[in-house]
Image (cartoon, rainbow, N blue to C red; front, top):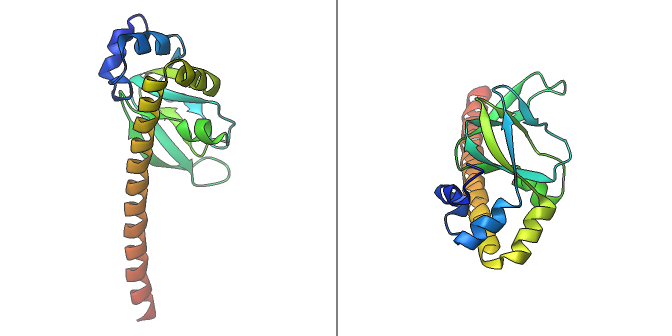
Amino acid sequence: MKNDPSDMKELNLFSGFSECGLREFHKTFQSVSFNAGDVIFREGAEGSTFFVIVSGEVAIEKKLDKAGKRYKRLASMNRGDFFGEMAVLEDRPRYAQARAVTDAELFELERSSLLEFIKKCPEEGSGMLIEIIFVILKRLRHTSDELMAAHGFMEVLAKYKRK
């Protein structure tokens, strides 16, 4: 996929890019590979890159214990999905761990390269940021729904505990 920038148009994040924008963006990322089971980044690690999945499956996981022996899967991601954007946009440590579930090919993009791309190609850059915001909002709605379900469950437990 790295050899032909026009193939990137198949991925939602790049679907609105012009051919010129695709060629310019193609210069900014690094293609990286991970084997099934590889940790891409650990929770709490410094992060200055985000990733777009070209192929494979990646799990986003949160530690359940201090030793890091147990994790809760927050999301399963596949071709076209991206992750790691929180650390890049906030300039803060990684909130969760990313692990390759299957062999995976990814685009890795540095914060500085992203900012440079946005300056060079403001139309494509702003479109990409809007797409990232839409996905973040979708994830936030999902998290809110899960929180409300957990709250409802806790209320039911509290009623039975009082009896």
